[in-house]
Image (tube, rainbow, N blue to C red; front, top):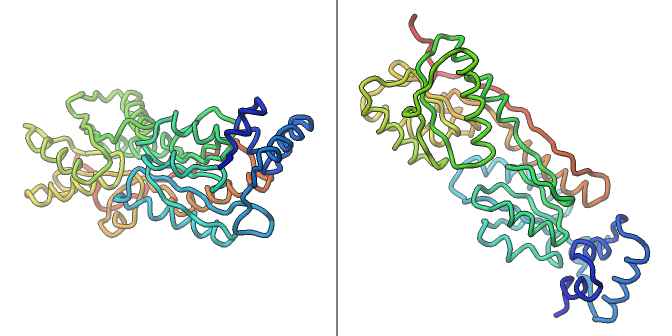
Amino acid sequence: MVGIREIAIKAGVSMTTVSNVLNKKKNVGASTREKVLKIASELGYTHKEQNGIDGKRRTIIVSFSDFDTLFYLDILHGVSDYVSKQGYHILICNGDDLAHYSDPDEVCGCIILSSQIQDSQVLAVADKGLTVITLDRELEHPNVKAMIVNNYEGERQLTQKLVEEGFKSFAFLSGQNTADNKERYTAFRDVLKANNISFNRNDLYEGDWREKSGVQAARLIMLQDRMPSVLICANDMMAIGAIRHFTENGIRVPEDISVCGFDDIIISRYLGLTTVSVPDYERGFLAGQALLNILDGSGDYETYRIGARVKWRKTVLRPRM
């Protein structure tokens, strides 16, 4: 079956150009457009116009790292609420399946939030002519729009307030090596440095965003002769794991150690976790809106930064001076 790859090869242009021509985008010159359409006709290519009388493909890929992290649900809910009202459908996949499902003849765009997907994989999807909205990184490509959280400012505000409240002994539990994690850790270290507070590298723990890595960090902290006064976690799931292990072993939160997270997933609100709140439902809603605006020709590819703010709750206790 003839696809856009065969047309691109014969026409001597990129698959992105072919896709743009077939989808009637205005960013291709007249001569190139005529050439591509002629070759497509000669090869017997039939552009699939499915699920809509306006000729638009109406399936969107949403790709996550995995499906056991609660904050994905809010994002997916936001995406679904917007795009479904516009007559679009969602195909959910993980990073391993992204290349297989990102066929420009079948789908019209992607929304990606996955630490397991390499930059090269994202760019390969964009090279096919698909519009890609990334929620976790910025990439230089004409078909990629980044919609990312202002992690630095949220973490900076959290750490600065802790310093002002009198905390002097800190531990940090990081997530995987992602842009989000780097920004959060950098903000944490910058605040300590600006306030002349030393930080021992032994108080930096490596996690993987999951609850079990919070449990492991808590185990290691409890082995120390002197525990830090506050543990800052790069996300809520790890903070929840740490709190669970502390309380199961007689360590009181926040009386013995304060704990903070990042994300403000639903369960954090019930547990009273102090965290940096990211509006994940709105994040998904805006990502769906941005993607469809681009497809309609009314959007742009400028980076969009989403604000985050601190939610102070009962897992932080003002230290006694």
